[in-house]
Amino acid sequence: MADVRGLSLLLALWLPVVSASEAGTVIRINKAILNYVSEFGKVPFQEALKINDEHFLDQSSDVLPSVRIQVLEAHVSRLGLKFLPDFGVRLWASANFTVKVSCIPESLELSLPVKLLSDLRVTQSSIGTPKISISTFFPYFGQATVLDDNKNLSPALLSMVQKDIKAIFSNKLSLNVANLVDDININMGTIIGLNNLSPESQICYYVMSEPNITSDSISMNLNAVLFLLGKPVMLPQEGPHLELPEPESNKDAMATLTLSQNLFDAILMLLQKAGAFNMDITGQLKSEDNPLNTSALSQFIPEMADQFPEPKPVVLRVRMTVTPVAVFQNNSITVRLQPLVEVLATSSNSAFQSLFSLNVVVNLSLQLSVSRAKLYATTSVVGDVFLVVASSNVGSVNLDHMQTLMNTVFQKSLLDHINALLGNGISLPTMVNLHYVNTNIQIREHYVQISSGLSYHP
Ligand SMILES: *[C@@H]1O[C@H](CO)[C@@H](O)[C@H](O)[C@H]1NC(C)=O
Ligand SMILES: *[C@@H]1O[C@H](CO)[C@@H](O)[C@H](O)[C@H]1NC(C)=O
Ligand SMILES: *[C@@H]1O[C@H](CO)[C@@H](O)[C@H](O)[C@H]1NC(C)=O
Ligand SMILES: *[C@@H]1O[C@H](CO)[C@@H](O)[C@H](O)[C@H]1NC(C)=O
Ligand SMILES: *[C@@H]1O[C@H](CO)[C@@H](O)[C@H](O)[C@H]1NC(C)=O
Image (cartoon, rainbow, N blue to C red; front, top):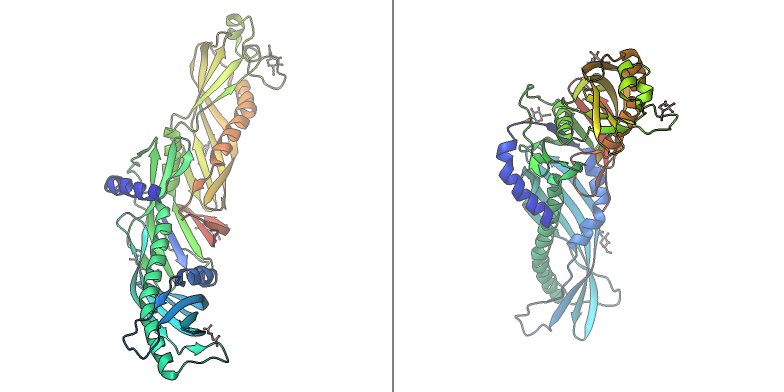
């Protein structure tokens, strides 16, 4: 938790600066989540309600013996939730407490039914996390019954005991629920946790504005903050502010996440600045399937034959000097890469000699998938690799031959590299232990929409 708090402070300092630019996402939590939480949450809620310590009832009258009570068990039989428009969530629950009452020399067990009703306000905290606060909390106590058939309390004593138990429980239960809400808030605070995109770069999300709550859903606008070597990166201001659309359909999904094209552009820019797209493709001599050597190249670059009578390995140094551009279409995303590829000969003392360089354009199509809390992409090359010579120290380069070489050696290495990079996954907005399941991804002209179930794995 210390990490979350530390980061919160950091974010609170940076937010005014970085929120000028937007890499927006919208998350909508639909009504369908409420059934899941009321089912799944029953046991944790029951745990949270437990009253562990013993209590001695305050006996002002001398007539009554000293009475000690101990809560043996709490059982929640029903937990219900609904959205309250423009407010938050209403929670109601039915619980039964088994209470051991010890009044010397006897002891007996009581069952005390309680109904709980609480309105919880959902807001945005100052550090950009969703926040729940208790607006109202009422426990309604039913009639206690004695569980042991052959024991009894005098009606007068039972009613005294019951009155005292109610007073104790009212306090304890509201404390317990307050603690539970604190825990939930700490858990939701992890939404602003930092996640790695590459070893040098990270992403985190924060809530930008008050949530929009209807009887069907809670939606929140989130913004991503990207970090390079620990420092937040200013995103380019260009591009219109994008109003992300309401989710198209699928109100049955628990969550709908809309990721703007801006977010993808920002991530591509960050990875490019971090040098994550850069790579070296190395040749080695005496390899039948690696044509990266000076004698293979001199077949179509005559000058090289003179310069390199002895064969030497060749390296393709791929540098992404231009930020990759993502093109969103209905149902597809293409990423245009424009690397500068420098072709170098290496010598035994590992000095490099620049032969020539190429400006390359290659289009990759992205296939997206979601696993747990990350978005993954795999790529394939669309069309041909386009190349022009940028500079040459070895005279004219036959581009047709070079093209053949690039289509094999370069394409394969590039795809391996980029697929490995994107295989790290891009963290989606989430909290610890919360996973997206059964996702359905739709790509539209300016955004990606993910409809999904949610699953909690403590
Ligand atoms: C509470 O316990 C009593 C006695 O065991 C039982 O009759 C009642 O149905 C229970 N109520 C709930 C809400 O579990
Ligand atoms: C909140 O959501 C409703 C229903 O989707 C929409 O009509 C309304 O414009 C939204 N309000 C805000 C402030 O976003
Ligand atoms: C250069 O590459 C070609 C094509 O892979 C290969 O046949 C040849 O043996 C290599 N030459 C050397 C000296 O490694
Ligand atoms: C997007 O493609 C789907 C089917 O592939 C089609 O039904 C829909 O009309 C298209 N939308 C637009 C805006 O072109
Ligand atoms: C890449 O795609 C763009 C359209 O998005 C197209 O104009 C360009 O010719 C393509 N380039 C290559 C090398 O296929």
